[in-house]
Amino acid sequence: MNRLFALLAVVGTLAGCRALNHVQYGTDLAALKTYHVQANSEDRLGIAKIIADDLNRLGYKATSGAEAPADVDGVVTYQDVWFDNSSKYLTQLNIQVREPGSGKILGQTAAAERPS
Image 1 (cartoon, rainbow, N blue to C red):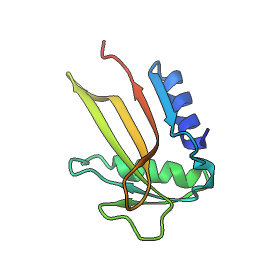
Image 2: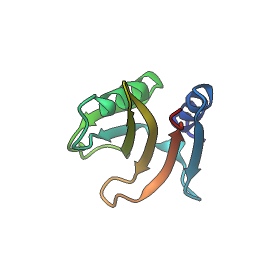
Image 3: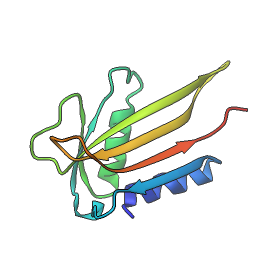
Image 4: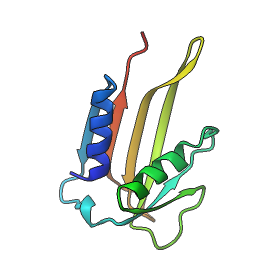
Protein backbone atom coordinates (compact mmCIF):
# COMPACT_ATOMS: atom_id res chain seq x y z
CA MET A 1 0.00 0.00 0.00
CA ASN A 2 1.30 3.43 -0.87
CA ARG A 3 2.53 5.51 2.10
CA LEU A 4 0.11 8.28 1.10
CA PHE A 5 -2.87 5.99 1.52
CA ALA A 6 -1.47 4.53 4.72
CA LEU A 7 -0.98 8.02 6.14
CA LEU A 8 -4.52 9.06 5.22
CA ALA A 9 -5.97 5.90 6.72
CA VAL A 10 -4.07 6.42 9.99
CA VAL A 11 -4.97 10.11 10.19
CA GLY A 12 -8.59 9.31 9.41
CA THR A 13 -8.72 6.59 12.04
CA LEU A 14 -7.09 8.77 14.70
CA ALA A 15 -9.53 11.58 13.94
CA GLY A 16 -12.50 9.24 14.37
CA CYS A 17 -13.16 9.10 10.64
CA ARG A 18 -14.06 6.18 8.45
CA ALA A 19 -11.36 5.53 5.86
CA LEU A 20 -11.55 3.51 2.65
CA ASN A 21 -8.57 2.74 0.41
CA HIS A 22 -8.46 1.08 -2.99
CA VAL A 23 -5.64 0.46 -5.47
CA GLN A 24 -6.40 -0.83 -8.97
CA TYR A 25 -5.28 -4.44 -9.49
CA GLY A 26 -1.83 -4.60 -11.04
CA THR A 27 -0.92 -1.01 -10.12
CA ASP A 28 2.34 -0.42 -8.28
CA LEU A 29 1.91 2.97 -6.63
CA ALA A 30 5.31 2.59 -4.97
CA ALA A 31 6.87 3.07 -8.43
CA LEU A 32 5.42 6.60 -8.67
CA LYS A 33 7.89 9.18 -7.41
CA THR A 34 6.60 12.51 -8.77
CA TYR A 35 3.12 13.91 -8.35
CA HIS A 36 1.12 16.96 -9.26
CA VAL A 37 -1.86 17.84 -7.07
CA GLN A 38 -4.44 19.41 -9.33
CA ALA A 39 -6.21 22.21 -7.47
CA ASN A 40 -9.95 22.23 -7.93
CA SER A 41 -11.63 25.46 -8.97
CA GLU A 42 -13.19 26.01 -5.54
CA ASP A 43 -9.97 25.56 -3.52
CA ARG A 44 -9.81 28.76 -1.47
CA LEU A 45 -8.13 27.13 1.52
CA GLY A 46 -5.04 25.75 -0.21
CA ILE A 47 -5.97 22.05 0.11
CA ALA A 48 -3.93 21.20 -3.02
CA LYS A 49 -0.83 22.81 -1.51
CA ILE A 50 -1.38 21.01 1.81
CA ILE A 51 -1.58 17.63 0.03
CA ALA A 52 1.52 18.44 -2.07
CA ASP A 53 3.44 19.55 1.05
CA ASP A 54 2.52 16.26 2.78
CA LEU A 55 3.69 14.26 -0.24
CA ASN A 56 6.99 16.18 -0.19
CA ARG A 57 7.37 15.42 3.54
CA LEU A 58 6.85 11.73 2.74
CA GLY A 59 9.81 11.87 0.34
CA TYR A 60 8.01 12.28 -2.98
CA LYS A 61 8.44 15.19 -5.37
CA ALA A 62 5.11 17.01 -5.59
CA THR A 63 3.79 20.25 -7.02
CA SER A 64 0.33 21.79 -6.95
CA GLY A 65 -1.71 24.08 -9.17
CA ALA A 66 -4.12 24.04 -12.08
CA GLU A 67 -1.93 22.43 -14.77
CA ALA A 68 0.28 19.38 -14.29
CA PRO A 69 3.85 19.43 -15.62
CA ALA A 70 4.49 16.92 -18.41
CA ASP A 71 7.03 14.87 -16.43
CA VAL A 72 4.95 13.65 -13.44
CA ASP A 73 4.24 10.01 -12.64
CA GLY A 74 0.83 10.65 -11.10
CA VAL A 75 -1.81 13.37 -10.92
CA VAL A 76 -3.63 13.72 -7.60
CA THR A 77 -7.22 14.95 -7.63
CA TYR A 78 -9.47 15.46 -4.63
CA GLN A 79 -12.95 16.43 -3.52
CA ASP A 80 -13.49 18.08 -0.14
CA VAL A 81 -16.83 18.33 1.65
CA TRP A 82 -17.32 20.86 4.42
CA PHE A 83 -19.92 21.17 7.18
CA ASP A 84 -20.83 24.72 8.01
CA ASN A 85 -22.38 25.12 11.43
CA SER A 86 -21.17 27.92 13.67
CA SER A 87 -17.70 26.97 12.45
CA LYS A 88 -16.70 25.36 9.17
CA TYR A 89 -14.93 22.00 9.27
CA LEU A 90 -13.93 19.28 6.86
CA THR A 91 -16.25 16.24 6.96
CA GLN A 92 -15.04 14.29 3.92
CA LEU A 93 -11.92 14.16 1.79
CA ASN A 94 -11.68 11.93 -1.28
CA ILE A 95 -8.29 11.64 -2.99
CA GLN A 96 -7.48 9.90 -6.27
CA VAL A 97 -4.12 9.17 -7.90
CA ARG A 98 -4.58 9.27 -11.66
CA GLU A 99 -2.49 8.32 -14.65
CA PRO A 100 -1.24 11.46 -16.41
CA GLY A 101 -2.82 11.97 -19.82
CA SER A 102 -5.59 9.37 -19.61
CA GLY A 103 -6.89 10.36 -16.18
CA LYS A 104 -7.41 6.68 -15.29
CA ILE A 105 -7.72 6.21 -11.52
CA LEU A 106 -4.81 4.14 -10.21
CA GLY A 107 -5.75 4.36 -6.54
CA GLN A 108 -8.10 6.24 -4.28
CA THR A 109 -8.84 6.86 -0.66
CA ALA A 110 -11.69 8.48 1.21
CA ALA A 111 -11.99 9.63 4.79
CA ALA A 112 -15.25 10.83 6.28
CA GLU A 113 -16.55 11.99 9.62
CA ARG A 114 -20.21 12.46 10.43
CA PRO A 115 -21.03 15.88 11.82
CA SER A 116 -22.37 15.74 15.35
